[in-house]
Image 1: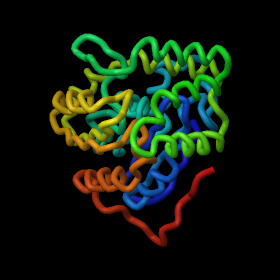
Image 2 (image 1 turned 30 degrees about the horizontal axis):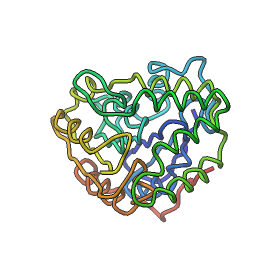
Image 3 (image 1 turned 60 degrees about the vertical axis):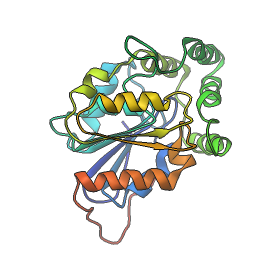
Length: 266
């Protein structure tokens, strides 16, 4: 698994969402670099990471656990939030941060929130044409909502072009994972600090989902950003970084730094 690492201090893992790769989180990750040693993977088959024989929940979680430090603060965005919740060992991880992500992304028993089956079918249909068409279909669904939505989509597309896109077959398997994954049981086992952060204009993870997720956890802090959609680290970068840094002050010592140099992104 390809992982960019930079900064010094306490380990912080940062996991991207569906169809993306680590470069879309570059600016946010650099900001977190003042707080620790940041690890930003490309999920299997995305960006610079080679594909797995099968992109399923067990295989992806095993790959994350093998490549990344277990005693880190795990931070995930969108699908990456659910993967972080499943990969982080609650006996070892320092804390968990869910950005625009909760226990599941589709409606189910006791869970009225999430994207509709019809919307996901539109993305699946687009993937029959090409990987790029599938990613574009999801971006139309989630990246244009909220204040600064058009700018968020443009910046995501620019970052996405910096590394190879996942294949259509990998994206199809990742979409099946997004549609079926349910991390709510894992989240209920968490007794260490958790930050749940999202926007009140997110079409995929609405405010009600954020609140229900927080209510079901032992030590959850909820932060809802007014006007933000599904990509708040791009549309509201200062507010997201400030909220995460404030939370990190609870769970880690100040980061050790020498001259501020880091490994950078490639």
